[in-house]
Each structure stands twice: as structure tokens, then as C-alpha cells.
Length: 384
Image 1: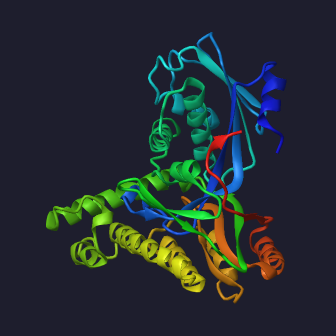
Image 2: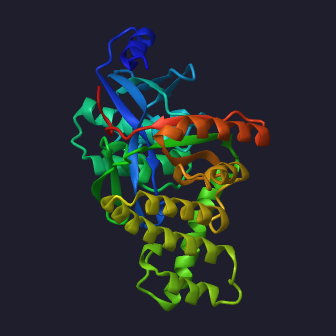
Image 3: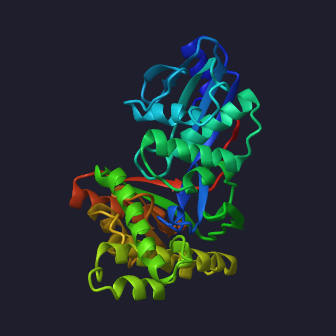
């Protein structure tokens, strides 16, 4: 990837003051648990976004998106959500800062190699790169946890997605060869070494992003909140699904004849089970029980597909194609759902053969060419 400073100079005809690199992320297990105050197990990866930035004095923000070959200019005096989503990832972050901080404006150039729509959190990588760069440029003294919360607020207010904190946290705090057990209720975290031995992580990209993704993501959050309100009628101490057990879900939701088998029950049952899976999965990693860890990944996909209903035929197909292969110890859909990638743990010696076979079957079934990525865990957001 060409250094973003070169693109900045060629476009703006001046040198950048600062350049920052911010990674995308994978999440090994713990999907849709972050906004339910649960646990997640993400890692930063070797797919990144780079930004270069320099101060201005004319109260404007001039933006150049290299990969889209698009430019936009907005005034710092009145920041509002923009028609172009990539612009929102930049100005949404600016809007979280005190107005006087960046009132004079800045020029910024953005480029990256994170596949768009693959569920690898390219948007969070941009937001984290921008807030990290502004923090350095203006010496704001922000800690990384505060940056993560500001990037999340930008996603809520400007991009319109009520996401949890995981994507931003993983992008900022990632470490090479490590996964992060993040407690999303308290933003406490612990690193665990990721030693996959003779296996590696391969992502299968459906090349699909169904239009339902953003709206259904927000709907799932509302359904979980509805479940919490029902639980609180019997257990007032429950503040989120983090506090509930499967037994309590069945007692309060399934036992209610009007709700039995309904969406709210299914959503809550999946989330509570998934929160428990994450906490036991890190023990599997510590003990080197990769096959047991992989079984939990398959169980997660089953829950996401059948109970949480955020999968799609293409994702289910990809998981089914490897489920019985002895060289694949775990696979599931990853990210918000309705498209994007599956994450697979595959024996290194079998990657080429399995990839070729799955690609052929996927093309035959969908008419689409399967894109694949072999990824490694890398450092979080940092200066270039």
C-alpha cells in the first residue's frame, strides 16, 4: 500500500503534519454481545486504513478519499450528517470534540485496504484513525478508551448505526499475536496470546451486503432492550442481558404464552448463551483446546442463524461447506450479518485445497466469485 503521505502531498500540494494507521478487526467469538454489555474476543488485523492530516486556517475540512477518488469540503461552523457515508466517518468524529478544538479546520487524506462491506469494520478503522490523528495534531490528551467512545458516538450520531464499542476498541487497542477479552459493560480488558499452531485464520467474503443490515442491526438492539424490560418485571436487578441467565430467559420470556417462540425470546436466549460461550472460550485458548474453541464458533453461527436471524443464505452456505471438513476446526459468520465474511480456522496445509473447493461450490450456487483473505493479528492504531 502506497504511503498515505504521498497521496496527501500529491493532492493538497503540501506535506502532512501527521499520518496514522488504524486496523480493521476480526472477532473470534462474541457476536452481538457488545451492545448487551457482554464480552467479546476481537483482534486487530493486517488490513488497515491510513490517514494523513494537516491544519488549515479557513474553517473548512477538506477530505480526499483515495480509494473512491472522491473529494468533499465542509465548514467547521455547522457539522451535520452528510449524504456520503465515508464523509460521516470523518466529520462525525470531529463533532464529538469541543467546537473550538478544530474550528480552524484541517485537510485529510484517507486510504486503505480493508474490504468494504466485508464485516471487518472499515468504518471504525477510519473513525479511530481520525480521532487518533486529531488527538496527536492538537495535543488533546485523550486516552484510547475515550477515543473509542467518541468514535462510537460518531457512528451513532452521523452514520446512523447504533453499534457497540467492540470495533473501535479492537482497532485502537489491538496487539500482534493477541486477542482481547473485552468486558463491554466496564471497558475492562485482558490480552490472551493467540497460538493457532498448525492452523490459520481465513475469511470467506460473500461479496454481498444485503440492504437489511443497518436497519435490522438497530432492530435487534431494540428487541434485546424489550427483553430486558420484561425480565425486570420479575428480576429488577437485571440491567442488561449481561445480568441474565438462560434459566431466567426461559422463565420470564418463554413461559409467557404470548411471547413463547417469538423473536424477543430467541434474541435474548442467543445473547445470554453467547456471553457465556465467550467466557469459556478464553479458557479453551489458554489450555490450547483449539478444537473445543472451534466447536463454540460453530455453535455461535447456529445461534446467529436460527435464533438471532442475522445470517443469510450465502453465509449459511459457506459455513455448511466446511462444517464436516476435518481440516476446519471452526467457522461462523462474523460481524453485523446479512452478508460480509465467515471466519474460518483452517489447517495451513489444507488452505489452498479448501479455498479452491469452496470457491467452486460458491460460484456454482450463487454465481458470485468468492473473495478470500488470510489474516494475521497486528498492532492497533498508531503513528506512521
